[in-house]
Image (cartoon, rainbow, N blue to C red; front, side):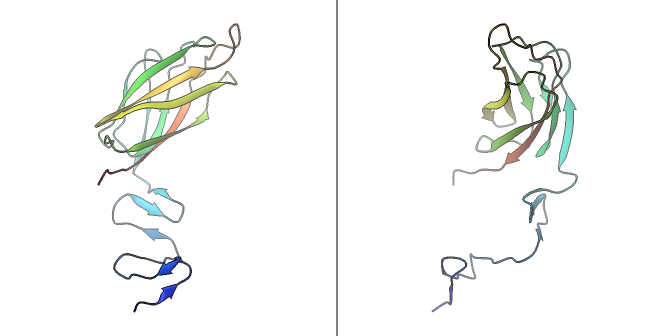
Length: 148
């Protein structure tokens, strides 16, 4: 019978379980020990023309700088991010790094497909409030997923 490992909450199975007491780097792009991707996995892009202009960034993580066209209070804009690293089962995480002018500006992913995802930028300031005129820098990270 295999030994019981209380740190794992059950019986240790050497064919499936791994205990790590140090940083682990994979042979690919994933990194554990500060979970994320290694240097060289990311990229950056700046949106041209307006807040609905699509961008292309084929990386697992990085930053997107939006156009600074005015976005009125209570208004929103959506744009497509073409990204060959994204699959339909993946989860894309976003965070605002900087640039928002309005105190109530949000960015969310509204759709993920094979090869792209859609970001919605929303100015949630009340009517007559501050227009969003900043070029928002959005950090993103693709968490690979599977249904099997």
